Length: 409
Image (cartoon, rainbow, N blue to C red; front, side, top):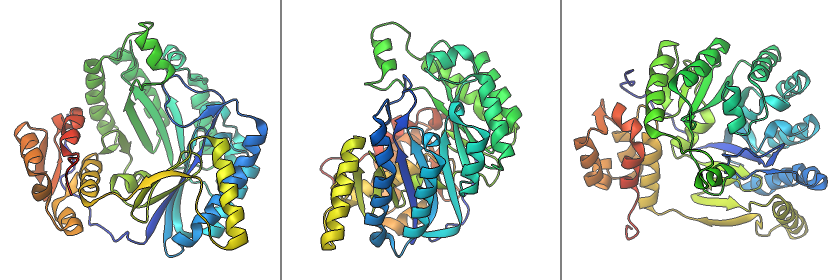
């Protein structure tokens, strides 16, 4: 297997930085494995009302972010590539008007190969979108059918070709392994064909059967078998070796990039840094609080409009689109930082953690760290605490022991 990077680059002060996430909940069809807040077949008027509500929510939040600089913007979903260029123009213009945008901001948009046209890609690029994340999942027709994906392998290749022609030089492709009935050879074939396209970034996820999804009920009714974790582990280990041979650096459990092409937006999450989520069901960690918007798009639109109208009339008013939130205590913040940080291949800097929280990782999590070091799942290298190669396969066993106890301060 491949070796892990020995040390982390010098840390930078990101105390005045902010990441923006914008949720577009609409889909042509909902995939059987998907448990995201996404919807198909919503009324046309609701789709039309969504962009103005999103713009109004930006205006509601902008005063709280006036001293921060936005370094990354991420359009997720759902299927953001379904959004018309006219609507995208309104949204991107509002972001620039309401927030302080870094000159080298990373603009990522998630897309499905099915909906992408060369004209649409040209338009997105002209609006400033400079990173495309495409949901490929597989290049095997039978696996795409099982996952209820609407595109063909050939369409993926066409979409990548069109994206390159439109000027996208930062492209991520999402892939899924561990699909039920998927032999190693089929996964290898998908990866080898993807490598021929030379994307700058690859996200490779093991299939999880989430409760409430169509796939979950098919498994529960014994219509299809469960994924085999042993096969998935073999596929994951082969992937690590093969992608390293191809020049990709694994920087997170499920993510690989050509040098310098890591996803800056997702690094904000793994570093437990602030981000503001806009849109139906969007989550935030902002101003020291975790908050979540209402899921239902119709209720989201109504709540934002009510809040905006009250703000216009009185100059103040609550943000009704927020469904709930909490201020995480110190123990929870420490647990978030170590669990998210350990997803990164370099792990966490012991010195940086100690400076941030006033206690070392051993002071905060001594028994759990000692346990998993003894089991060979954690190790220390050059001042970093990180998962071992075996620990990458059993990371959840480590993470569960790092969760705060309910009676922690």
